[in-house]
Image 1 (cartoon, protein in one colour):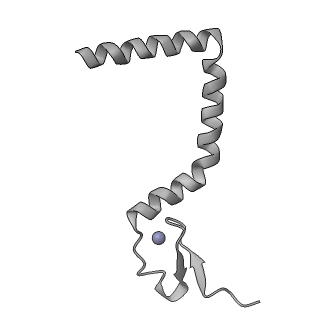
Image 2: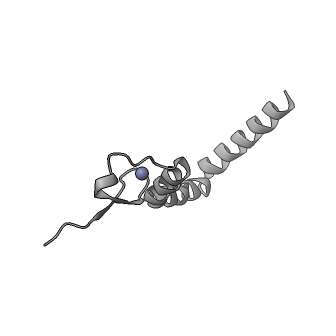
Length: 76
Ligand SMILES: [Zn+2]
């Protein structure tokens, strides 16, 4: 089996020629979107967990307290 001429950059996901891997410079915007792509499952799981918590009695109270704090910090 021949190794592929290209490899995905671990930081930005861009397909980089192996001979250029050492000189490749990541585009910062690509790095961010690549990380978001990798983390999307975690972000989705966090949002689900937060929504479940926010639906509990304790969660509703926490959301109420947080929204009061945000409002009072805006007025200050
Ligand atoms: Zn890169």
